[in-house]
Length: 469
Image 1 (cartoon, one colour):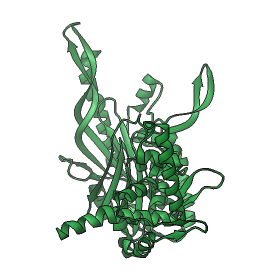
Image 2 (cartoon, one colour):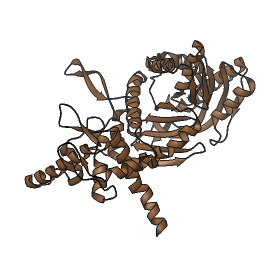
Image 3 (spheres, one colour):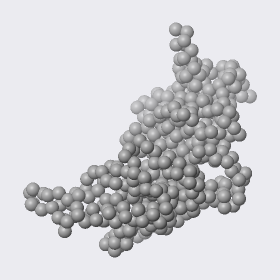
Image 4 (tube, one colour):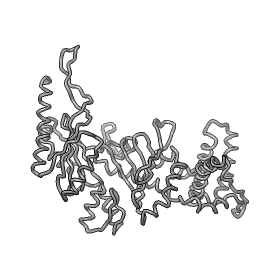
């Protein structure tokens, strides 16, 4: 009865706590109580694992009181009856840290009050290392990174198999170990836990020969991303298109860490970031709201099951699609950065850019990289929206002069001007025509020169002028 809810909740909560004590006693592992969220629980578990040399099994159980969403009963003055409410409160959470035989170092977090939510944290690199160990493939680690591996091809093949692990089965097994009331939950609701991805992180690591090699180019990569990647670019990296219907914020920021500088691009609750870790350059896509992306699956339409692209849900069975979306985002980001070279290496090419060139038929004047008009052209041409399918005359015209607000005569005049600009860009080797189409794409030289020009104009020149003043 509702009046007995509090008493019953405490009894069931006690069963879960007793189970934790039983497991820790059986495994002879400690239960540690923390009174501050500022203490990193992972550091505590890592220290115990290292000191006691735990190779497999339970490492420790950590208890801490944290905010939660739970049930409670309250009286309704109008009806004079008790009602069940869902509200924010605080309760005890249990963290079970394991050195798991399949997933490596991981933890399970269970809420000791109704509805006993569980969160499981696993790291794909831990899983990968377990597979590499099993196959005898040598590798070196630095913190949460693999900085060297004897067989890169095989390591990549193994890593791609991570999305095919039967996570629901593995997580069910873990939940049965720590939740003694799970059989009762299944009996009442005819099902147990429904596993979802609360947060999915997908990283692409580029391994450099050593830390110094990465350090030489990394500042240029950060500068390029800050100066050249705008909101449209970020949307394109994430497989979206920036339209007038988009509602939300797109923010780029940087953060200095002990290891180096991190740059992060956020689109609502999802993000794309880059940072350096030892001799590894990492680009990482984080998905918190999968409904911003689409998945191809069966849906019911007019009583029939048909295949459609629909907003993606959080089910753990969608992990393969999380990986597809994130991998594509990382590759687009790295592709946009691939032509970046130190500015001093581009000085000669920037000087040639200002000179007249011949395309075999016509003579084309040079570009003045510091003029406002040329800067606008250089910003419009390599825009992120063009990186996948290329761009047309109309695309550049709309970015420079606006869209459909102009008269037909003005459109014709501005269109002719863009045609001359495109010919000029082609003559200088900054863009090339896509065969059998009316579209153009930026060449590797173009990305290199346009990026260097914009960095010089926006970053180095203002600093120089400020120092002179």
